[in-house]
Image (cartoon, rainbow, N blue to C red; front, side, top):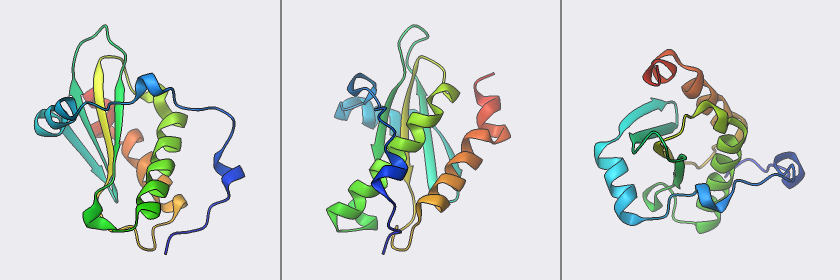
Length: 131
């Protein structure tokens, strides 16, 4: 099963604003179809340029194919939201972003997910994409 991670460990009183969440099915389909993918370990980030003036919007995607239990998928999404919230300054304005997990999360640990995510956003290919 998943690592038990203390609620107090993750919750700092700051939340990701709802206005930042990408909910439109059409926008998500466009993002996944036309976006540029970056992969590291279990984490995949897909980016699609919308406009320079708009703020970024983000979707956290966890497929039922990888785990049938809703509480598992919700926990992984909470972990992804927290990782993104702490690093949102790494993403410039004007992009739609999808953060997803690629492999089954049975046995997945928060620290492993954090390591993969940090390797991805600090990687040379990812940082060069915005230059």
